[in-house]
Amino acid sequence: MTGEWFTEPIAGQQCAQVWAPLDYQGVQGRSIAEVPTVRLAVSRLPASGARKGALLAISGGPGGEGLGLIESAYPPEVREQFDIVSYDPRGVGRSTPLIQCAGGLDTDSTTDDTEAIEAAERAEVAACVRDTGLHVLRHIGSDEATNDVDLLRAVLGEKQINLLAYSYGTQIAAMYALRFPHNYRAAVLDGVVDIAERPHEWIVGQNRGYQATFTRLAAFCADEYDAECPLGDDPAIAEATFQQLLRDADSAPVPADEGEAVRADDILVATYTGLLWRSMWEPYLRALQEVRQGDGTTIRRFADWQDSAGTNAITAITCTDIAEPTADRAARQQQAAARYDAATYDNYDPRPAEFPLEDCDLWPFPGKIIPGKALPLAPSRIESAARLLFVGTRHDPTTPVGNAERMAKYMTSPLLIREGDGHCAVFNDENSCVDAEVVRYLKDPNSVGDKVCA
Image 1: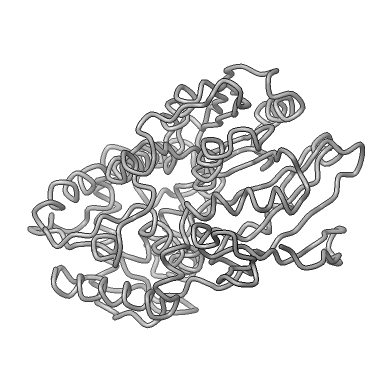
Image 2: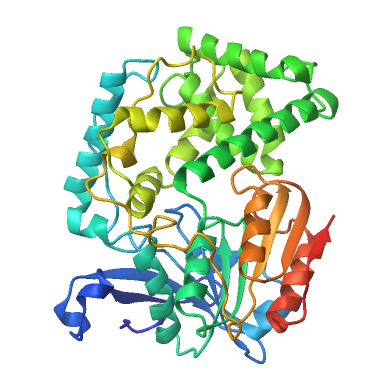
């Protein structure tokens, strides 16, 4: 069900609020007016030429706002042939109700007191339950978000939808292809999530990816950066140099013009952004050098941007998807240690004697899409369903290229690899070869095969 489409005074976009059931399983033949609902904020940019269908963009995160994807750098052929449609997923941005987890306990970011850390985690979980509502939390994850995509297809009047998914959004697209195999015409998945990986495995994979990218950043800083390298001139000791900078920031927080003084945790949050895209390497290194010189202003902005990018939604959606609550500390220690060891650049303090339980360990209910339980360990595409196009970047820190390689094999679909660094490239003015191949696929999903773009 949808409200009337209305035109925004922004490049001719048409917007609407789409009502969706909070709990699809709870509808059971009742009308939308009789069940709890969410409202999805949707924007549409009509095709400028002979229309071929609708292309729905699915944002990353989880918890990333999606309306802005309508303004990506779509090639003229795509703008001519497809309505471009974007939306804020349930719980996020201009969609309602919003995920809210305010009011948790604050704890000293430098503490190694396991009990204090866990008290803060429990308080955050309790705040999510209180502020969002337990019933909403149960239905805010990927299971319902996948059904939302099919609802949007129906609202748009499309027999088959075309999908363009980024990062976490590729999980939704892959689940959609499995659940509604004949309701999509084409699906491009960029920055691929391997939906067959268990949660512990993908966290270890991400940590290894960030470690590898930090090593590449250190080499770039020493050999190619055109200013003084804050990590030093020897990549072999860059990690130790960075760890000392983190220790210094905790012992003497670095003042910033706006907000609180910068500590190690703030630098690490900023580092996740700095490593994620190659275009951010130089701005990040400049900000890091300013920290060394006693000015935390720019690194504070980096950290605050990352903190504002849906942290509550990331926690809530992730735990709703994959939480396996337990009070069995021993069962978590080996996994926590493996995650800790997978990335060493940020291990500036002594190794913890005991790793605290985390948000998802303390979640009030089990996750709904745990691989091996709700999702197959080897997903496969039925022969009559359209092929998908999986896109990976060789040195992507957060969705390693192996994810795309495995998913392309599972789903017997073509694989497009971009050589280089960074996360997601399609229609972002990153690589003309990638964009051209995606355009070719959207025109004819059977026209492309495996390819590597330099």
